[in-house]
Length: 341
View 1 (cartoon, rainbow, N blue to C red):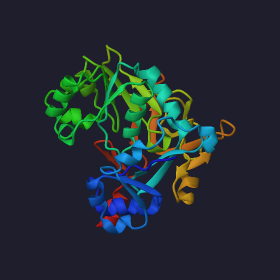
View 2 (view 1 turned 180 degrees about the vertical axis):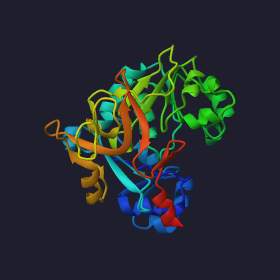
View 3 (view 1 turned 135 degrees about the horizontal axis):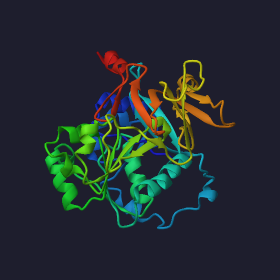
View 4 (view 1 turned 90 degrees about the vertical axis):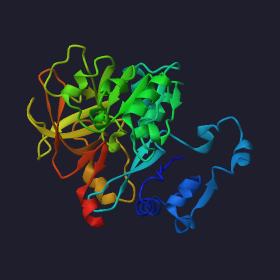
């Protein structure tokens, strides 16, 4: 089945909007989650209280059911995560199981995650980076560490937590490190920067760690390209790198044709990570997810991001072709804010 993460810290109106659009059959919630939604929102959904349902969980079989017996395939949905919408309505992105599996297998190779690794769960569960962290840990049989909110909100407390728990793999937004007086203290053995473009000066200040810059929209299963920082990096900009396994990227002009090498184009993503589309939004899905003219049977996601190839073959991110902005890694559509005002 598929899961829909809801963060109790989000505004009640947004949570109800998402719940109404997705119409889940079952809601797993503790007291904080139920309070965030309010009793009216819980009338039309079956609610399982996580604090009192322990006996019911204990009665379930310890073994997993056979997927084939359930009729499940890799093309079934793994999760739906909502992002900011330009019309004022959050939009749900549907990601299938095969996309999540491809992501996990790529992480094993790219980041050297193993059963001895310790991965920190920094991202909110309502943000797609949380799926990235979960798969990274569980796909390798590694330990997943969940810090309390107080550690996430203060960089000095987070650095103490990472050191105390001997965290080996952390994915953090560059803004968090930029605001820290000692960003090097937040560097684990493998530090993945994601959610926004880091400054070159920040990357050079983190020389003690293995630094990776990751890029990808929610609609491409979290990550589409990565760049590993070399020890002698002295460039003026931080690239977003090259595609991960089973992923294809194209820089196209306004007519859908490839731009010359080094020229600016809109980034289109194809391959295993491309999402099924937007939940209950067929027009938007048709607009943003198109048939690939390059690979038969493939689909491309039209990102709205601008990029160009650097001489060494890595991609450089150059911003957006619309009004979308990112704040600490979260996609913000000014249109959604205007609609609320």
